Length: 93
Image (cartoon, rainbow, N blue to C red; front, side, top):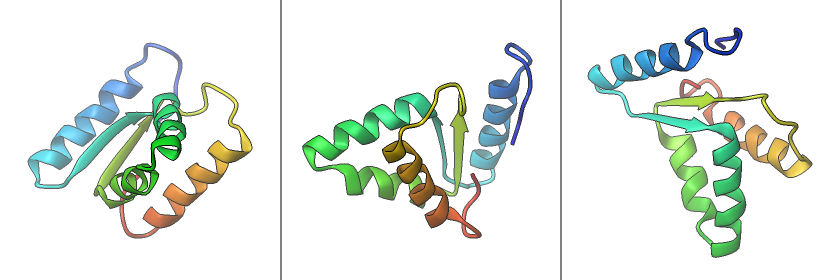
């Protein structure tokens, strides 16, 4: 977990880790958490929700940026729990 004030380079550092992991042959996905929750809500409507969850849980390194900037609804907390639970001790988040 990378924490700090706005503008201190947290996102830059996370992306640097991601670029290095990709250079070493690992699959990497960078997502902004607010956008991820919007996408999850939309995919529930069009039926592609399982595909998006699979994408988020399958990648070897998942970078979640802008986490904690907004309060989470019960459904968002559940989705986040499911993603983290699927990745626990198997993949890096």
